[in-house]
Length: 638
Image: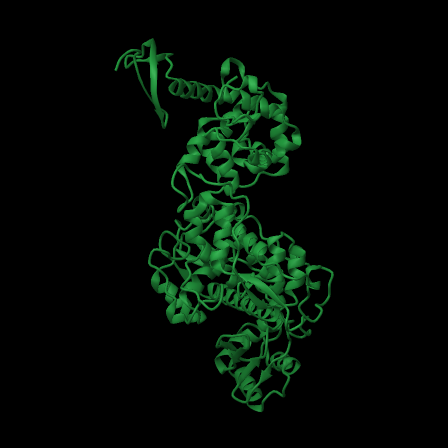
């Protein structure tokens, strides 16, 4: 029995549960759906599919495969064989039917030469000299170096990062809604646009690039190809509570297939610190935000792998915030600490878990760790409670614990004699929206500053507000008495523009101020906002940027349960092999026979077609088969 035939028979003998596991682990095998088990075996045996499967393996699994390929199987390899067989990298076969020399005395053999050749193409950099993945079996991950971080410091750092993220993202969306951002023809933002935006938001350019990529992935901004502008796209974003906003951004980050934003040098005193002073962070010319070529086929997988590695290295004590029904957190002692792994330890663990991705890991892991710090998934290098819940896929627990890190919205502000209103914290969205109609925003930071002027008040009255409505709003939400100078200014603006009654048309919901502002409700974080899958929604909008995010990603989406079930039903309804070796399995079987002839030095009969279209049957001895090109010579010739 040939290797391909053995693999097809092995797949047909598997249970439905085993096939479901295989198709979820190797989704490329059913894209598009395959006709029969022989075709499935052919796809699973291609070099590309085998490369994707090997990228999932850790170091000991690759070492076991390499040992089997070299005929050096040992008893210590036995525990690893079921996992490799589940991935269809090893195929069960009786010893009597084994025509390959790579079974090592076990009841398994390598499915095709593509596994052995793929193992030889990628070896871990810096590994011991000799064959790929040689040396003693390293069944345990490397030891980690951690730094004890007080839980209060971790929570303060994570909460501050979350507040900064949401404040700057809100500012970016408002800015894009007021003044669309100019772009190059490709959709990327130019140097001048980036500097102008960074100055308007008063953040450094590296942070701005991260926020722009995140906003585009979360579909808060969209590309207008006809005007070459990026515009605000999310109408209800500003009205969402902060829990829903943060969960939407983190989910968009996890699903992003874009390269992480390059980070500047991190502080050596902390595992992962925030960016230094804005003057120290400049954007490389080759890494402009929203560039079409900024995708990476393994970006989604790498982000999840890094998040899980930090979680596994930082074992934190269980807190009451882990439950979605817990209303408040019990006091944490000042001496409570949690281990925070350094970047070298995270990278070492990922190298052990994914040794074939060393090049990508070395380049991208530091930047991904930096993005996690900007999102508040980590605080001073230690995974926060919301970050831990996100890494486990528990979005309800993430939303519940997030309320404990971010202060509740407030509905009051302080009006000073210099015609400014100071909000000593995060204002409720309804109050903030009304206040921004009446005054211009000044400064940056958690405490918002709003300046009243005759121009801003006249603009509010032109939008439909009158002096009585404005003064009633100010008296209701100001924790101090409204200064007489501001009352005079409102009256003067009313005289210049004329009194306007409350509108009754489409703008009424946005401008109604007679009713008191409703406090921000704590909606279910998952039901409040569920970001649609970026690929489908970007296509639905039909923008010119709809394709380049998806083109650059290049990753394989996980099949749905219905797709897997339909594929298994089709496999069960068809014979293992198509008639006359047709379909996908026919060419694969011919290629396998040629490789076996090359290895054995045997002669084969080939039917060839000459330049005139005439068929001829020749006896040849194959020499090599590379990239679909066969080199052969007549038997007995030199």
